[in-house]
Image 1 (tube, rainbow, N blue to C red):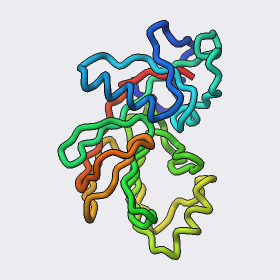
Image 2 (image 1 turned 135 degrees about the horizontal axis):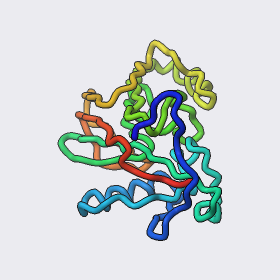
Image 3 (image 1 turned 90 degrees about the vertical axis):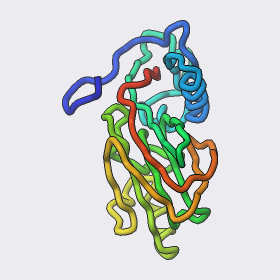
Image 4 (image 1 turned 90 degrees about the horizontal axis):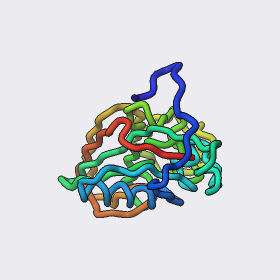
Length: 202
């Protein structure tokens, strides 16, 4: 069930025997995409690294995943239809120019590498935190300096929105990164959420 304000979230439960251990968001996405394309159920994922793992307070301790100290969380799954091609992401989507002066981001996790991009993001609120970025070059250094602490917001060049669905049309096809993995370029992005689609253990 999608988390609501004031509700407890997650429960002490170890990774089941058929769970899959992954060490990054990219590995987690690979497992999800393979299952979705095969029409199979999504396995429970044990997270040892990545931005979703960090958001959930994961320690990277493999022994913990199968112990009584492990915590299992239901989390949402991001969905993108990029120029008609369906794909999925567990932590984040990024479409950007080389310099980041124009970018679109959608996050299910709080972190993007060392950057606290989405300080209000929650992986199980049935919402994506989206950012439509149009920055003049002179503002880039200021924004980058504030990203590690999440103090880059609000900013007039960054439109922040939390929504279950979102649509973006880029000026021209841009390279798309899903959980850090580059995929084909896209011009039109239609984003949505599969609430509670995945269970993860940290």
